[in-house]
Image (cartoon, helix red, strand yellow):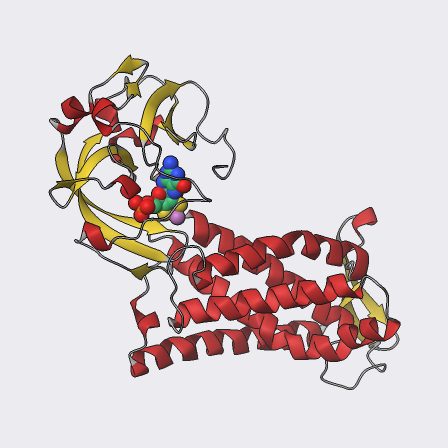
Length: 363
Ligand SMILES: Nc1nc2c(c(=O)[nH]1)N[C@H]1C(S)=C(S)[C@@H](COP(=O)(O)O)O[C@H]1N2
Ligand SMILES: [Mo]
C-alpha cells in the first residue's frame, strides 16, 4: 500500500488535488528514479510559464526590484535546458515516431525555446553584445514572443496537462532540476567574476552600460522602427495642456538631473539631463497625462508620478541630438526605455487611468 497525491489538471473539470491511498505506487511502468513523460511535461510547463512571467516582469520594471526577477528568469530558462534531454527521450521521441504533419510546429517551437535560452545566455555572459535591433537580448525577446502562440498550441493540442502523479518522485526530481538550474546560474555568475567577463557588469535589469556621461556615445534606438520627424526644430509645435509652449521658454526653466536610460534591448546609459518636472507644467488634479511624439508614438503616465517624470531639452550641457529626441524628450527615472518618449509635441492631462493603454507603444 502506498499513499500519493493526484494532481488533476483537466481544464474541463477544473483543478483538484486529491490525496489517495492506492494499492500500488503506480510507478512500475518506468525505471525507478525517472520522471514520467507526463511529469517532465508538467515541470517544463511550470518552467516555461515561470520564464515568461519573470521575463515580462524583468522587462517592464526599471527599478532595483527587478533584480530578483531577472535572476529567477535565468533559473527558469536553465531549468528548461536541464529537463530538455529527458523530454527528448520521452515525448519528443514518441511524437516524432508518430510522424504527424504538425510535428514541424512542435519542432519549430522547441527550437525557438532553445534559441531564446541560448541568446539569453550570450547576453548574460556578455559573450555577444550587439547593440540595437540585433542585440542578443532583443532577439531573445523576439524568439520568446514568437514562441508564445506555439506554447499555447503545444499545451492545448499536444501536452494538455492531464492527471499527473504528484508523487514524491515528481517533487524530489523536479526540485533537483531546479537545484541544478540554480547551481548552474550561480556557477556562471561566479565564473564570470573569476574570469572578469563582460557579463559581470550588468545592471539589475540585466543591461550593459554604454556611453554614460558622453551623449555622443549613447546609442540611438527606437521601439519598433520610429524615425526622427522632419520638423523645423526652431518652430517646434509643442502643446502642453492644450496651450502652445515655446521650447526656448521651457529650456530657460530647467535644472540638472542624473538619470539612466535603460533600454529593453539590453543597454543603459546615464546622463546629466536638463529637465523640467512635468508637475511644474500641468495642473495636479487630473488622473494621468499622455505624452505624444510628433511621430504618433504615445504613452500615458499616472499623475502621481508627475514630479519624477521630466521634459528634457539637453544633456551633458548641450542640446539633445536629433536621434535622441530633439528638441524635447521625456526622462523617466526608474522606468524602462519605452517610457522615454522622444520628439515630444503634446503633454496632455486626462481623467483616464494611466493603465488604460496598450501594454506596448505601437509605432
Ligand atoms: N517617439 C519615440 N520615442 C521613443 C522610442 C520610439 O521608438 N519613438 N523608443 C523608446 C525606446 S524603446 C528607447 S530605449 C529610447 C531610446 O532613446 P535613445 O534613442 O535616445 O537612446 O527612446 C524611447 N522613446
Ligand atoms: Mo528601448
